[in-house]
Every structure is written in structure tokens, then in C-alpha cells.
Length: 119
Image (cartoon, rainbow, N blue to C red; front, top):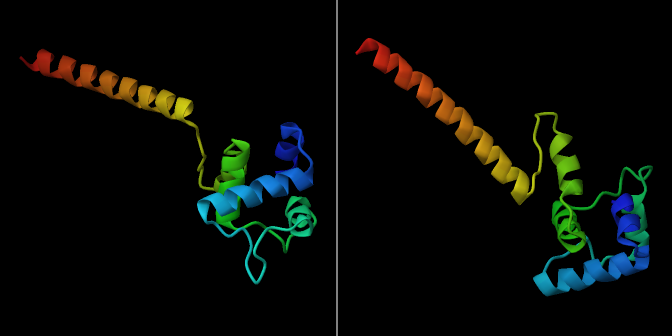
């Protein structure tokens, strides 16, 4: 998340402002407890890899991805399960669909050849 903030060219305070604005717009709470909005101190802890006790909720992570236009944090979460899961965008989803369709076409052609050979 820290790399994404740096690449976006915004300060951490600006990032918090964007996240809070989006949270208000979509009616999403970014923090638990009594806090109404995400504070800079909490956000700093989210970005610090040494602060293992402070991780964003899945709602906050999802909103972060939306605000900064990247699925990377959700992809890291998906990969962390060790089951080969990935988060892909629309273009990669189309490529995957194309590859699966090509594989199906190949299997159908092979089946057709076998049937023709039996005739």
C-alpha cells in the first residue's frame, strides 16, 4: 500500500483525505471502534510492515483499491492463502476466457476426429 501511495504522488495525509471522502460517499466505515473516520496515525500503522497488529479491514482494503485504482493489495491478500488465488483485471479475465475457449475448441476437434474415425 505504501508503494501505491508513493506512485500516486500524494502525501499520506492526502491519501487519508481521499479514503475518508470515498468512505463517506459509499457509506463505508474504515475503522472499528469509536472512530468515525480514518486517522493519519492509524493509516501510518497500516503502511508500516512492523505494525502487525494494525491491518486494514477487508472493507478498508477494498476501498483503498477503488480509490487508488489498483487491485494489488487484494491480490496480495488472495495470494497469501497459498491456494493459487489471484485477483485479475478485466483484460486478463478476457485473456483467460479466450484461453479456456481455445482449449475447449481443441478438445472438441479431437472428439470430432475420433467420431469421424469411427464412422
